[in-house]
Length: 281
Image 1 (cartoon, one colour):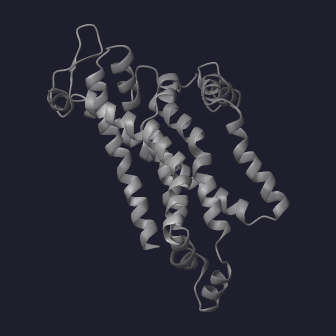
Image 2 (tube, helix red, strand yellow):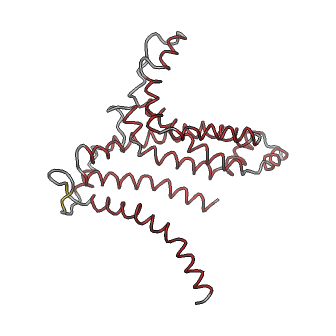
């Protein structure tokens, strides 16, 4: 056995556990869902092994595009809000001394120590009519009667932003922390002001962190179902809730699978954009 063949064999052995994991727990389930999307619904749920395109025809009939559009819009707003809040926060953390940097990073990571469901339920206490927000606003005489905050798109957006903000901050921090700040000094020596330096030097060189953070926020936000179910009620259904209802309430597995495949295509688009940006940078 040659050295090259031995190296290839060792590489195959090293990659085989990860490859098997991806095949069993990712590729195979996706293929099963894809297969189910072309089958008919059984009389009492499940599937009937009759191949059809009716699920995709029903999908593109226009009845469910309102839910899909709402999901995309809320995910987009969540991503933009997390970027506007997370970029300055990541810059603040990256430019502190090591002691403060570690403490601030710990504060960003601490929410992961609590179950996401519990953290989402906590917003009910904050946003309900007798909650902390309305009580504080009434105590300050800003409002005379409680605002309708809970079970609204606003509540869903707040819950999504709160839940996924760390996913934006951490990639941005990693990108900014590696930035060579001597380039800022060089730009200022050449006559660029702070705004021009930011737009022409700092922002382009941290684009990878922006794109990575945006994907990590947008992808789970567009398919979220816990947050809209708890904070939005039945008034703010997203595509994740629609898929859940098809599988567990309507028991229409083929149509739920077709919706799942559509969602898969939607979330693949920003991932492909990230790969494109990574190749160019």
